Image 1 (cartoon, rainbow, N blue to C red):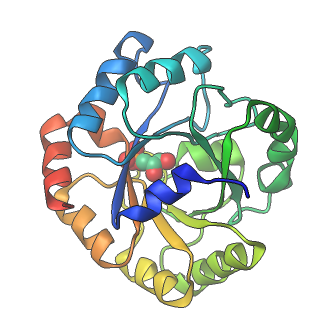
Image 2: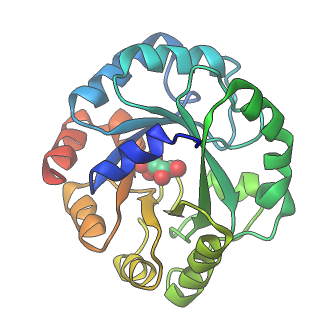
Image 3: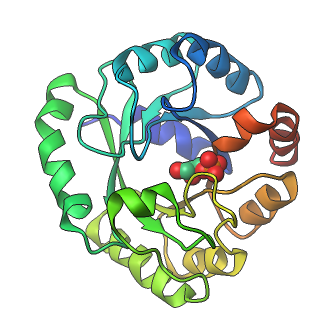
Length: 242
Ligand code: 1GP
């Protein structure tokens, strides 16, 4: 039987907190230190990836993050070439909210042989973009439109589709640095109508928001920009989510 140690690890604790470290925003020489810092603050794993990936050292970056992390390092790929041997797992995303076949299936097909060859643990994720009140990089790069904030039933329909496809997680994503996070009401509805675990990320900048998102039903929250913007706010969030 195939083993899924990272998936099992993430399911052991609810809620889990994942830190997203973007190789385009953190210098290679700081990667190990920042990994140590977030692990020290109690995150349950580290995601590494970028919707654009300007930097050319993805593999080295992952290796540095691994050095500083006693918890799983999971690739959060923006495209098929964000793959690295040293990672523990990959979130195998399909951008279900979009109607761009490249991000629904195309990039994935390009990546599978490499993923198989290096033996990464694959965690299938139904990735759903939610409007965050401003135009985000992920919308631009994926050339897709997010689900309107006031249409929770549309989000539920996409999340349920992912579940029926056999995805292990639904990821409700407002986009990195989002002006507004995913609405609480939408999270509640998706949680109520689906039975797979729920990841929520994008624009979580305060302890209050993080708490509200967890209370609404998120099994995992993702913290990205706040780690670079305000270490003290990040620490507050970590305390509020324990
Ligand atoms: C983006 O959900 C993540 O993919 C994290 O977003 O950078 O806004 O925390 P932030």
